[in-house]
Length: 277
Image 1 (cartoon, one colour):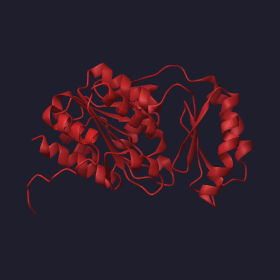
Image 2: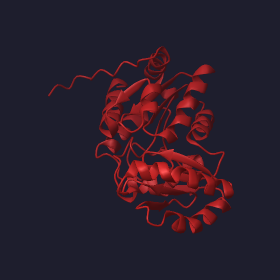
Image 3: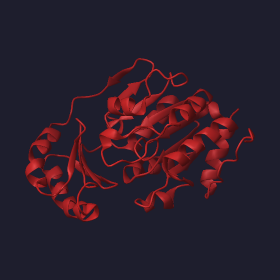
């Protein structure tokens, strides 16, 4: 097998080509931010069993020392993402940051600690009412602490269950001051005003990022895609990477580069690290 550096995919937009060029020219100013489920980890029926792709840690630890920062931006609790990703105490990832619960929580590899505000009271109220609403639907509830997610992937007809529950869950969330975030066969009830776009923009400004790469796979990543568009409009180059699936076409349409799921993301990260020397 050749040891030659593999070429990176050519972004389909000029903004994406400019973003990749800026990252390659000034990697020490670049923020690489990535979703977890569906991007670094394959989607599985039981989210508790989701684990990072076997080669993800190697790719991240090869890339992280060459850029300004690497962040994982996820709807999961930060501690769960750290555990399922195996991110703690990994050589090369000493400065990794995990922004959990869409940025409401933050885990820093340097301290190994999570910082977070108090939970929204509406989450507890929704948690108490969900069992009666979901009885007989064949769905499964994931308690994220600061949010609850209703998964329909295990239902007899996942899409029909998703469609049928969207309106009543939206009404339930609204009664308790929450919003519903739809995803890949999942409806998440969580507090408003916090999303991956807010988290990404805040962290990019915190570190003074000169360019931003964001990779995601689901509807919850659209705010982060919009944040990169906004950053680009104000002079910060950016690259949008989609971990492709047949379930979320909108992300594909908006991405600069589409790769084949977590395996493709890992390959992209490894090839990027190789290009940076």
